[in-house]
Amino acid sequence: MQSRFDSILSALDSGRKLLLAVSGGVDSMVMATLFLNSSVEVGFEVAHCNFHLRGAESDSDEQLVSGWCSEHGIVLHRKDFRTCEYSDAKGVSIEMAARELRYAWFEELCRERGLGGVVVAHNANDNAETLVLNLLRGTGLKGVTGMGMVSSVPVPGSSVRLLRPLLKFSRNDILEYAVSHGVAWHEDSTNADSSFKRNCVRNEVFPLFARINPSFVDSLSRDMDRFGQELAAADRLFELERSDVELVPGEDALLRVGIGALLESRDPEWLLYRLLSPHGFTQAVISSLLELLRGSAPCSGKVFLSGTARAVVSGSEIIVTAIPAEDGTSSLTVSSAGEYSLAGVVFSVRTAAWGEGMPLVQPRGTVMVDAAKLPFPFSVRLWEEGDWMQPLGLRSAGGRMGRKKLSDLFVDLGYSLVDKEKALVAVPGECGSMSHVAALVGERIDESVKVTEKTASVIFIERKP
Image 1 (cartoon, rainbow, N blue to C red):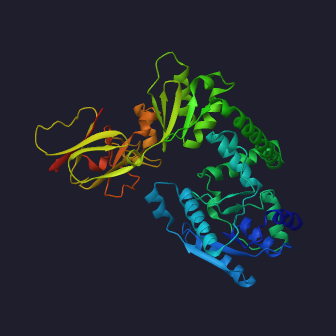
Image 2 (cartoon, one colour; image 1 turned 45 degrees about the horizontal axis):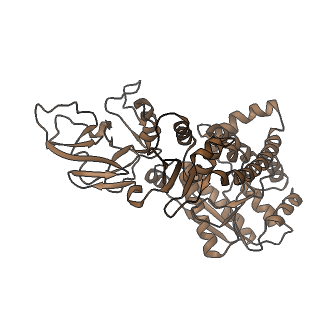
Image 3 (tube, rainbow, N blue to C red; image 1 turned 90 degrees about the vertical axis):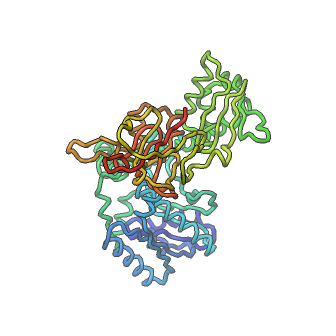
């Protein structure tokens, strides 16, 4: 294994010292040992993250990595992260929080110390897991090419290299090396928790694959290589065909597409997806746009939105422009009654003293909350993945308050994709970072802000049509 690793490393080496991400698990400890024993003369330093998610286990991992670096005279960088706090503040999963935190730190270390890249211990099994997860998510051809041996650190705008020299080694290869060379490592107890999607694939799906084909990891690796070749061919074809439909953008446009030429092309949906997806448009939005273009009804003036851009059907062309900063603002502070506008949605806020005879059922498009439970100033922002609420009156089977993701609530309400892109939520405080929302503006309120017999005053939030 060492000789194979050295061959890979010699092809990846930039001549500069590298930063090894070492967690204390078997993959990264073997990777560090392979670097230490390599015949390729490459310097390296080690970075270890303590996410404080597993109590004493996390601290024990840090001690293992620290001891290894001290024994072999390797520079070690350590950092503690408040992962749960970051997860709550950003409204992302713990897994995503840990990923964002570590890569941002790795990128910063490389820039500060002039290092040639970050090295991670992803192996062939990890790549196969990524393939299966991407297939389930529906990411298209690019998603099934797997991870590359060389890419960039996943930090916006980063040019720091991300290297994966173990990508051609299976987990069994790594375990055999660890045992035969006396490599110490710690097993992460959370790896057995199949409630995580990746663990579920690893622990429950892959054993079934192995019964069908014991060499399935090698088979999937070969398939990913072929998918990569197919993607490269598709890229070349796209560059040829885009010239037939893409017009000169103009001063303010990101992209202009001729509708006639698009509909006459061999595969309009594929071509439109390749043109629009870099601007954040999803397959669902692109399919809706194409269906509109193929229909008989007038479609000029129709607008389709992504998170950062809008596509407008104008006469014989589609014009894609960036959403202006004032339209792209994702949140605002409501400090008093008045009329507000956010992301093209207008809503009004008014207050009133609570008294007898006031109707409990509000007109469509209006929500009513206890002013003491959602006091000024509060935030109104665009909804985000991870947002949730306890809709008024919803109870679980056991009689406890029912928690519901907004994404699920949208399904219940029959929201279209455009409706979801314009959905606004009210959140206590000025930062607007909480994922537990007080209200879905114009539709529902959370149990925590409901009006009761103790209510003194109320706030009405009305979404204008």
